Amino acid sequence: MTSTSQSHRLLRLPQVLDKTGLKRPQVYSYMKTCDFPKSVKIGPSSVAWLESEIDEWINQKLNNR
Image (cartoon, rainbow, N blue to C red; front, side, top):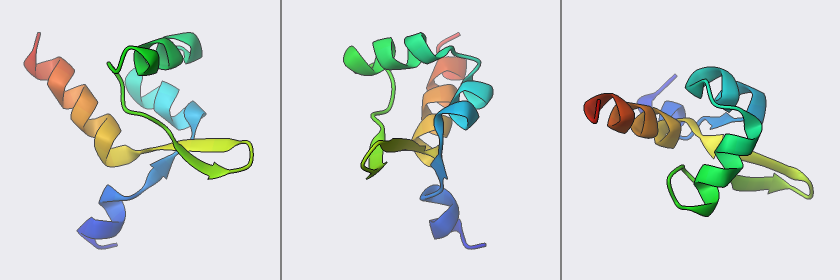
């Protein structure tokens, strides 16, 4: 797998929750206040998040502790 495809890997909500330790309401609350990466619409009723943006968010949290 190339680094380009890894940076564009899409995560569904259960994967995002597992990776961040957040709960669903927290994710959407943080998105509303622009404190969490926005989701990408991938279908009529499906969304996902870019893994690279989730990783960046986690790194920012680690750097701010």
